Amino acid sequence: MTPLSDDLAIIEEQAADWLLVLDEQQISPHDSTQYPQPLNVWLAENSLHSDVFNKMLELWTLSAQLDDDYVTQQLAQLDAENATAATDIKPPFKRRAHPWYLAIAATLLLVGLVTFMAPEQPLQQAVASAKPAPVDTVYSEFFQTKVNEHRTITLDDNSQVDLGANSQLAVRYSNTSRELLLYQGEALFSVSKDKQRPFIVRYQNSQVEALGTVFNVRANPASIRVDVLEGRVAVTQQQAIKLTQGQAVEVTQQGEVTRSKAQGETLTMAWQKGYLVYQNAELGNVLNDVSRYSEIKVKLSDQRLAKLTYNGTFLTTEIGDWLNSLEKIYPITVMQKGEEYTLIAN
Image (cartoon, rainbow, N blue to C red; front, side):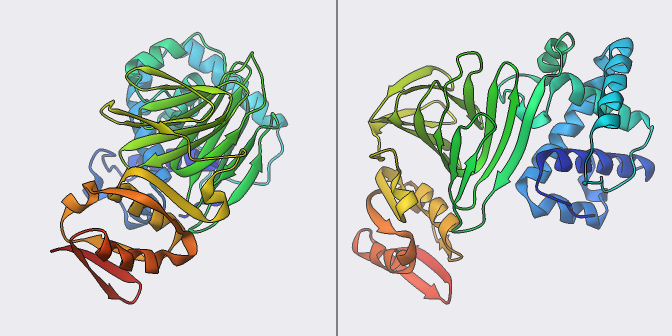
């Protein structure tokens, strides 16, 4: 079983069907050691697959809390909508009238797309608060790029996204909000004004809210960096941080905040021109970006090297030369074997 497309809705349906397969084979979904090999392959294909699968499992576990009459009403509404909606995409398995599927479908109806729950919101609270809320999704998409690929996307409201290399972005618009989830990578957002629907970008436990602005979001493994090129944004994690044009901030998962000057100018970012620019960046974050722009593999002999501070600029087309130049900056030796580099502490 493999994904028929990278569309988020399809991935969600595939995850639900895999839960049905486990149930039919009497395999506990909580025991990954018993998963059939095709499921393991599907989970390993894309981090989004495992994220959605795990969230789907959590939501199903909580679905017993939902009111039966409300679930029946919402499922009937979904069936009516599906009967009138034309689609060329078929699910990987036939849809079944099965308690697992009904529980999952009901939970999705009430909470919305599983991946768009606020990361900091407890699942129990999400299910409870979702009961009276109508489903009002009007537009949803999933986009991704390959290594060293850029993509420009125009969204339903004419907002524009420049998606950087090896990046993944899910979009969900409703009648009251515009929410985007950056799973990995980097993106520049040019936001159309809509006072009735906030424009919010989420990554891990942080969110960035904007009103009529241009800003860049870079998703590091353990932090988020936001550069404001025009207008203003509010970056919220453990606290709300207001940024205006020309300002930037990096916030770690632990809530540590580092402010700096925005890297972009004239409403573009350096990465759009083939340059990677860093100010007091951790070398580990720089190497994470390098992996999005090149098939070159980089290993560290000592993970403490990832904490070294890097300042500089280099072309994405000259990553090999840049790696070799690190010997002149740090007390390290760079060993190369084909497309694999190892940084060894002296």
